[in-house]
Length: 125
Ligand SMILES: [Cu+2]
Image (cartoon, rainbow, N blue to C red; front, side):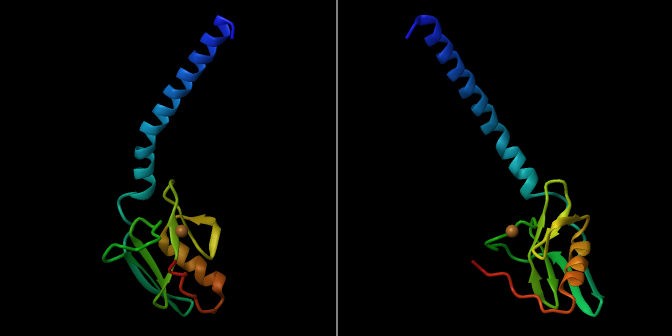
């Protein structure tokens, strides 16, 4: 390999290494922001279109699949799988592509979507 090309290759490799090092350093902060957004939304408990919807900070940890930052949403006492997006909006497993502002709005959207059908528990693994 001609010397010039070889040096260029090494320089490129070093630049790549530096770039990936920076990405590695930035990742934990981004992850923390995405997974532990604060503060948690307020709890709610109401009857909407004949269904009881509730939201609250989940008591006790250890949920295997928690994207809601520790916040649980329930429809007639069955947990609705919700996820909080990085921008603070919420989606649920029944309306994954329509982010709403609050978990209560996600619960209402799910009730609209279910049209009286029972919510089935999300498979626990
Ligand atoms: Cu999920």
